[in-house]
Image 1 (tube, rainbow over the protein chains, first blue to last red):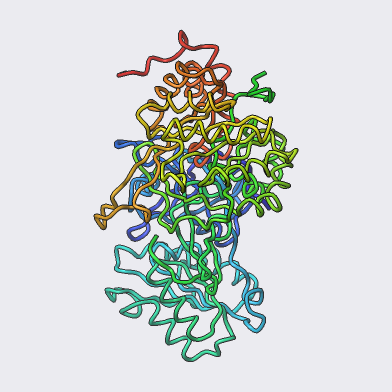
Image 2 (cartoon, helix red, strand yellow):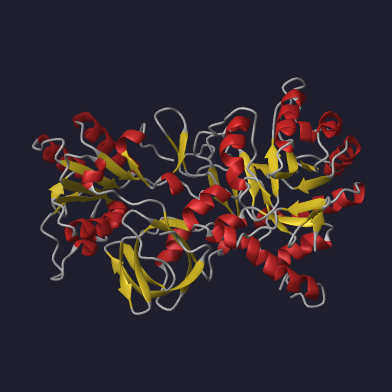
Length: 280
Length: 298
């Protein structure tokens, strides 16, 4: 199903703090329910160009959760304020309006679509990059796909979004394991340490790795999977002005030297299509 | 009904080359793009004789009220364009203008010759912001180079030839006059302004190419002045662009002499910006200047 043509105003229906990040919800009365991995271009209706006339361009933000709402679809976004656009989105309060274009981009594929012999999924998220894995975890869980989820955070002030991985009892889902660089939760160290241990004990063809997070983490995940012959799907980020293939800004190099447009060819790419995950 | 060099158009708003990929937009938004096409004519991304991968990222950088890009003209080359893209672009419900660029008169002639004979093509825009490999000079920065190029291309087709002017010259009107003398049918302006940004995290140039072109509302007053200057120097119809994001902006370009206007960077923020600007334009024209809000220093 394609996205509605053009941008539309959606009302903020909720906003809450989440351990250094924020989660806000939009009520989308027009668009289809998004698929895991897809993203939206977002810009607040008011005060988008503030002092210094930035932000100017909309921001590409992955959808973290979704569900039916009274008169449309609820869209949840996990945001960390790291620049003028994300800080403005963090400041959103219920009743405000946001310009929305989407859902855009492709979705994560099921393990068997990626690799015939793979029955299960290993989800590896880092920092704000845990967002698209929340919706993916729920979808795979509903379809009975065996799951293991590894989430890593820098420290307690950068560990938001965990509540998106909780069941009805507000407790973290049992398949979730944590790592933190400061040791405040779970394994002290990188989430990729957990992945390396897990893959060492695994039959390489039994699961597909799905990952989203900072470039250095994604590159470590890509290299680990490539080294062990494990199939992977990585949700990347790249500077993006439009989200629908118009600006050609979000170029991602392929092993043959050509470029993909992440907005229309991704944001989810098979690990083997990426030469190396680099900072853009 | 507006017209450009005999091409009748439903409204005066088209797109700036390289700011809208109609084929990708159909993949994303479906056939609603055809049913509700935002522009009255479609200008393709620039095609070159051979395929180009484009520049290494990083390619874009947000600036106050605008952005800098150094995309590097990625395209399939002439052969790929004619075989794969032209049939898809021919399905659009509006006239097609194809933008071309080459680094010699011979290559420009090959492009214009092969594109102009296709009945799907209504007009050709010449992107002259590149060096001539023989002279080493940027064609669009030199009136004599521009005139000589037009003289070489003019005999190849009766279809309109539009010259896309660069703003990175002291006297754009002189280039427009040269284009007119060489046989051009119209000029479009402005292309992006040469610009740089420094990444505050590294202290190094933000874009991999080191510099790029500035676009967006930040360049609008410069575009308006260049449009006025070109209009007073040459008698050619003009396609005005540079930071247009509303009907009010477009009305200013028309007041400054533009025959048509083009929307560029605003397409990135609003995929239907062309249609919105067109719908806002008629009332904006009707109320200018008496009904216009007092903006300056208020």
